Image 1 (cartoon, one colour):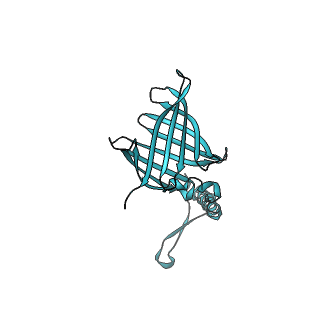
Image 2: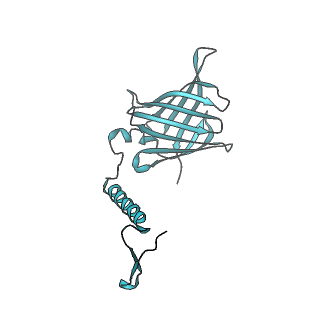
Image 3: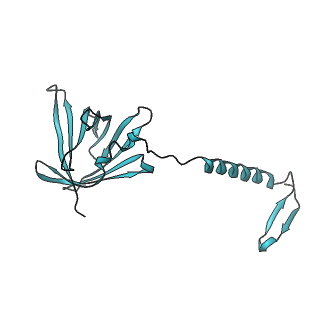
Length: 191
């Protein structure tokens, strides 16, 4: 390896090393300049937000909820807006302690809402949007951890009293009918 002259400067109490052209410091200086230019270009891009009307279509589901099924406590659910308004994050805990989470977002490729639910028991992947009555209707599949898969749908309806009805159905190929999977009523949790 070549030896190289180094000039040491001490302006304002700092030590700066300046390398001469063609020596060991040249690759370092090129890399540092490239990083600085890339960082500058990234900083100039506007911060994207999801504020178009489609992104607020599911806002009626936001909040901390107490959920009942058949007039019995079923669990608690928190739905929060994340990622500059681009994501609704669901965090569910049932009365028996089981949990699950979902990501709810507008899929830019399909221009509709999509939910991906993950729990110890299953993964649900459904998509759609508001129907003619104003309810959020999503359709797709449920896949259990054993690999069984079936058509699945969910409908969220805002009710006059501010509660939300959530109705999940799964297709039963043996009966060729849709079976209720879960019907829950969401009421805002007391502060």
